[in-house]
Image (cartoon, rainbow, N blue to C red; front, top):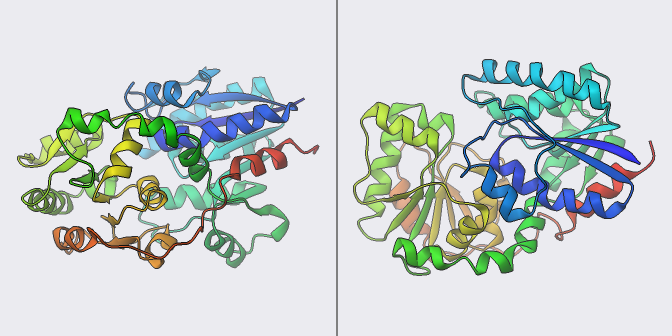
Length: 358
């Protein structure tokens, strides 16, 4: 029986873990130990995801959250090391591009524990983003690189990674979208509770530091979403970081409907029924594509180029404005049909590789 230590900490990682944990359990030859760093600690950002997605409670909860990138990552390193020293797992499994991802890769590699990185090869080519640094370092320290797309595979090949380390498996978020679609459909009552109709509202999310910590970009986003709300209701589940920055900058929404963060199933219900989505979240961009809802990405670039190339997503930089116009043009638009994120069996492919004898 192999022991796999899975390290997560942020809400997108909980979604990715759900289908993979299920697939690992189905192998019958893997014991998974789940370690939650605590990066997202609020019940609405953490507990609800474990409950809704049927993920087992973490075996270890480190309770590390808050502070700057250095302080947070340093605290995670300090807390993770003794846990992994005690466990001595056969492999550490990390996801995505958060501080939890980076900390897991660093500690495991220093303890000479093999690392597998789910969502390897993702690149924005913008090293001003903390997430980009986390991805690059995590890939360098991993011996197994699970790539979600052909683009990610090419990125890794261009960086000199050997082909025997790269596995093109598809996107586990697509697995989750398929597995939980029926349950999410039953949560459309959230539309009634907010007072919006299917296809008659815009869903927005804003949380990235590049937008929330830059006063000018934040002002542009607020003013443009307010403009969109003059013509169509805008619903914004508000991230704690965003709420805090709005208060600091003396900004507030008057027309936009802000609601507390919601769980995965309610979020899918809101995404799938929206007329359009405006977001700076990588996961929400993909989910918009899964549900064939036109998306406007509030950033200068995106890692998920496939969504743009296929016409389902468009960039609207808060540094230049034009967000309201981009949303207006997105509504009612359609892109090209394609399946760049696999067949919904990514988790099974990952579990099979991880479970193989060393």
